[in-house]
Every structure is written in structure tokens, then in C-alpha cells.
Image 1 (cartoon, rainbow, N blue to C red):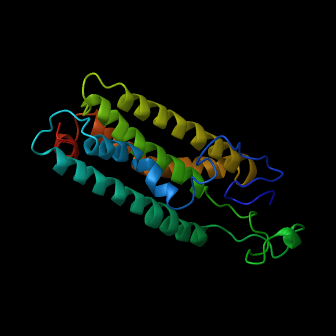
Image 2: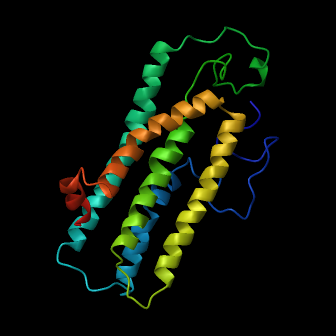
Image 3: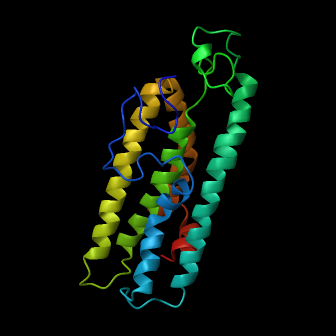
Length: 219
């Protein structure tokens, strides 16, 4: 293995120091907080009194979306990662008993680790949790702006924050695909992430789920 899965510096190439959170995408608390940054911005706007006049149910819809995002984070961790990993263990043939690089592995790693097919859980994390949750909330923020009309700071923070999140997620995607997983394993991970991406797309952009969209977004 050329470097550890947390993307620390090594022969795989260092992550630039000027990219905050780039090394922390797969760690707590960043893996939970970064997808929720648009909601954190919304709360900050309320604290500093920069929001427009709210409707009576705005706080209710905001709490519902917060719980929705938390449930999706749990779904990604417990189902799309742990449960799917158990299913994978049942159907994937184990690797050989010995490999030439066994002595280079960590003591807690099994022999020939990496030889067996193992879908990329980091790809699932990036594309089922970090990016779609942030994108959904930022998208809704521009559909129904909550900041005062003369305020350009808040939409700027949301736009730049989402853009930056995509940049560091794509860098991490490249690293995990280039150094830890085959293209096939990465594609499988991305297909698994669609179990979150597609429902969010249907809820927010189509007419097939008006009741669900009204419940969480109030529009």
C-alpha cells in the first residue's frame, strides 16, 4: 500500500497545505459537519440578524431538513457502508493466503489486503453524503433566499463554499481511485451513492414528490 487511506503525505503525493479540510473529508467531525455547512451559514445569518422576514413555519422546515440530512448521514454509514460491506464479504471470493507485499502491511491488516474486490467506501462518502447534502441545501437557499436583498456576502459564502467542497472532494476522489481502488471498485461505489443522489434529485427538482418536498422545504 503506497500510503494510508486518510490521504496523509507520502509517496502518493502530499495534499497541498493551502487546502483546508482536504485531508479530513473522511474523518469526524468534518465528514458530518462539511455537508451541513449551508445550514450552519443559515443559522449564523439568523444569529447576526441578516435574514429576511421569516414565515411562521420556516424554523419547522429547517429542523425537518436538518433531521433529513442526519438520517441520510446515518444511512450512508450504517447501510451503504457497513451493511453493504457485509453483503460484499458474502459474495466476494477471498484473496490468496500470501502476497509479496504482506510484510509491508500494517500489523492489523489481513494477508493480501487489497487483492480482493472491495468497493470504494470513500467514493460513497463523497457522492452520497458530503456533496449531495450540501448541494441540496445550497440549491434550496437560492430558490428561496433567506438573506436580505442587499446582502451579497451570504450567497457568496454559499457559492464559494460549495465550489471549494467540490474541489477537495474531487481531489480525494482522484487519490482514492488512483492509489487504493480499481476503476471497477470506484464505479461500484459511485453506483451505490446513487441510492442517495437519485431520491434527492427527484424530491428537489421533479413533480413526482410534491408532498415530500412540501414537508421538508415548504415549497
